[in-house]
Length: 73
Image (cartoon, rainbow, N blue to C red; front, side):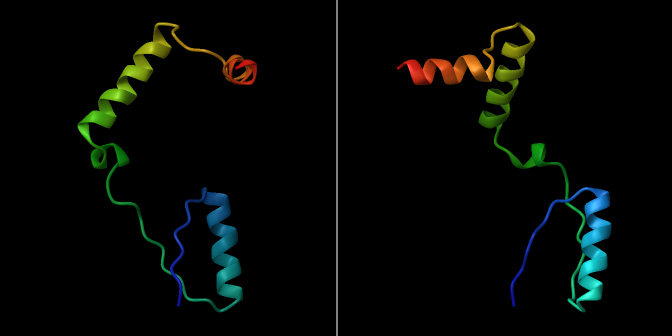
C-alpha cells in the first residue's frame, strides 16, 4: 500500500475524487493543519522578510537579467 499526498485546487479535487471513486480506490481527504509559516524557523522567516523588504525597495533583478548574468560568467 502506498500513501500519496497531493495539493490540488477545488476543480482538480472534484475530478480526482470522481476518478478514485470510479476506480474503487479508497482514499482519505485530510485538511492541512495550521499554516506553513508556523512550521518554519525564525531564521527562515527573517530571510523571507528580508527578501520581501528588498523587493518592496526595488532591490531585485528580473529572471532574464539573472540568467543572462549566469550565462555571461
